[in-house]
Length: 241
Image (tube, rainbow, N blue to C red):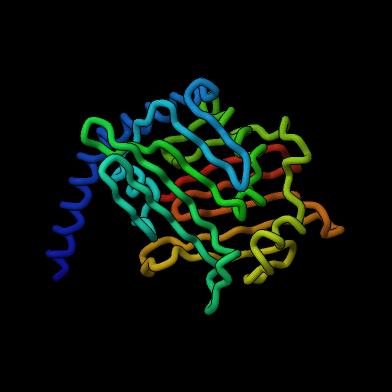
């Protein structure tokens, strides 16, 4: 049994290596588009945040691999594909209004479904605000990237104070915290319908001594973790593979 398991993992790693060669080229092209993101992307801030790609390069299989999990819902058409990832609070009963869906829309081109748009739900954008997203995107091209640790670091000193969420806004969007935290708030999430092999998500919010001001936000969504320290002005995104 141990030999079979070893062979299975060797096969999986071989297939992953073959995928990664082409995949990394597409991911690199996607990242390079951020060097002129105003020409390559359109951001719409309404009831949430929508990002539209002018020149789609990522395939649906790429996105599933990059997120580390299959979508909660998948709706296929002749020309379009929609995938929805629904992260909800890790408790026995979940109020639908506190779930965090991520909508991904793909468009068929040359026989492939390519990522055309990503829509971040209003519940998530209450914590990861449009301004914070814009600052992250603006630094994606020039950010220091460490391939070994799979992390990107960026500067938040220019972030508008109005783009820092308040504790009241976070609770209004996500409901009461469902985790224990000595200082601040902690939310634990799970991907709806996923098995134990899928990484759980969480949101940790540090507050100042008055409890009225957010000093730091750490949010993990599947294999991605955003850390924004508003006091030091430092931010990072880590990828856990």
